[in-house]
Length: 281
Ligand code: ACO
Ligand code: ZN
Image: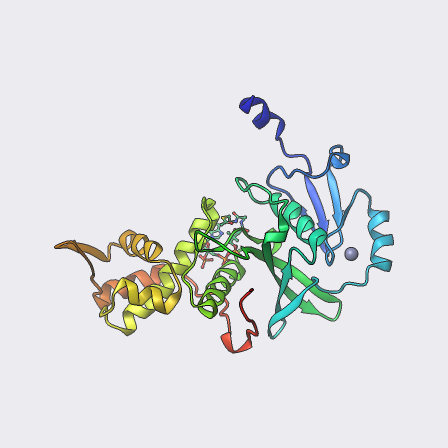
């Protein structure tokens, strides 16, 4: 049965149109059965409703009055804006976003229960409206201290630093909540690369400033990164020794500099002074 299921889950939709982009999809996504015969889907870039034919989309665009994701704009810096969408208040939008995202996410189960999630949708804005670049979802209440469930940068926007921006943003929210957070597992290869890159840069910067004189607990308090993630990152950089039952961080400035150079670009920074947000209650 399993094999059969896997076999039938072949990629259905091959391309999508979204805003000014035509995008090739990566994986299967469980769109409602009436879309089974479609190779291409046309999305409204604002409400994320999807249609089978271009003419339907054109008709839709004449009457769709959204110019940005529904919900609250909680961050604006230059042309970059972040919107917080409550899956309970905007159920259809949340479901549409999940269908869309699954086209680029391999192993994630799709949540029909969008009620339980908040969606943070990152946009580049111009005179035509706010164009979605990527998003992450977050459980309203997580038992496992997850601060991010799924993350996606749409393919036309990938490798420009938006992924690291989204990750940084998720930790800024955790800091405001006064909690540590970690992404839901499993991570995809690209997800792991992006997280490793983010963790490495953030931790190395602090180690450099404090000349290594700092504990994992203190690092965790400062960054909202979960202690385990700090430990695995520092271990992978070979900056940790285990002495007399204790983890010791060794931080030779030369070694730190070498790692920092290898860690690549810092990416787009989150300007915390432009984040206007209070935790969900
Ligand atoms: N090849 C090699 N390295 C890569 C690649 C790639 N194609 N893409 C990203 N990276 C690495 C690089 O180290 C990069 O940093 P650098 O450019 O400074 O070298 C780093 O990841 C982050 O790059 P960004 O430009 O900040 O990230 P991007 O906007 O491309 O988004 C993301 C990363 C969200 C993982 C994107 O690749 C994506 O949406 N993938 C499909 C969906 C997915 O796999 N999501 C994660 C699932 S796990 C989860 O949701 C909890
Ligand atoms: Zn629309």
